[in-house]
Length: 434
Ligand code: URA
Image 1 (cartoon, rainbow, N blue to C red):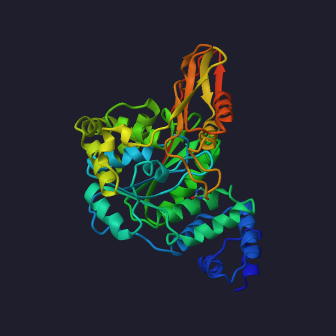
Image 2 (cartoon, rainbow, N blue to C red):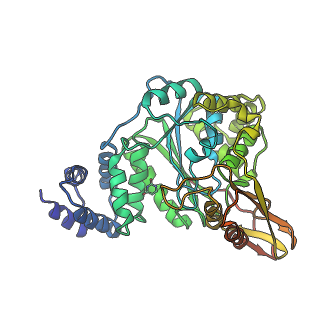
Image 3 (cartoon, protein in one colour):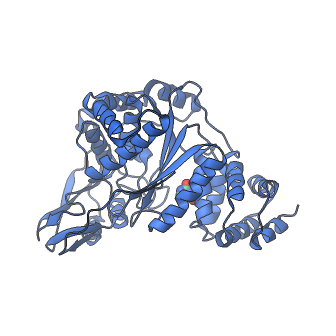
């Protein structure tokens, strides 16, 4: 079977067989298929899409290019919640401890932030000496003791995705929905779970800018999950403003801890409660949102969820006392206040712009080798729907002697869209695709 014939078949929009997909991908992994042929194939996929079967074979072959992780020591219900990436997204920090306190476990690979979006690894690494598990054994040990099994991506997991993603990046094929779906799902399927919940962010600060694109991506990912027998669902959530009040790293950890003490930002609460409800429903423990809500309230009020987070931090090398003493976290030494230049209602906060404003003062990375400053970040004083007077504080930037502070301030100001009319109440949960 010649590679050129496989590419030609895809170009003519004929369905590829499992063995044709395997030949192409195995060849690319071992170096016998060159970049120029793979590029051509990716572009053919970009224009001609993939059928359900093609997508499943493509994803499974990707997954099987590296290690898979099983949790033999855990007999609880395993939930892998994945976010497609947002601004101020600290859902994992809060969700893991709640699922654990409810007798379930989180098993997932977490990422680092890049560009305007943050990453769970960076948030936890704000905690001095905290280190994510680097071996399966360590991951299983911590997950077994705390119900929180978070691990950073390693080169051993789906190495083919890394190679193909780098090629997509330089061949204008990143924004292909089947390629995004298979890239994400190959990594999800490499780690054992009973349920995959995809938090697909929609809006200005998200990868998917429109609900239609988000729906299509969700549908394709759920389709892959179904094809391989892994229960998968997608929750489409709003990213037309940052999630919660804080954007950064240490400040997002604090916001997460506060949520576990019952002090929630409304949007964060809605999303976390919905995801926990879906997990409990699929586990077969509740039928209604109200039942789930009561269970969550209970583990927050009793301090059980907070205790799980403290244990997780401690077993990962950090000082668990940070849950009560925020001065143990890195702190910024300067603050700049951003005030409104007009009066009206906040109708939108461009999340991408805010993410970039945080990135330029060091809270995020412009390129993957940049070193971040965990102490710095932005706190929003006003959220969508709030009324603001001229001169009133919109946000505060916390920084350490940074030359980009004024451009950061301008970006924050520009991201606030203030209008005379009160905006309609936004739904944080836009849609659920099962
Ligand atoms: N995230 C991934 O893991 N892969 C993509 O292709 C896009 C986003």
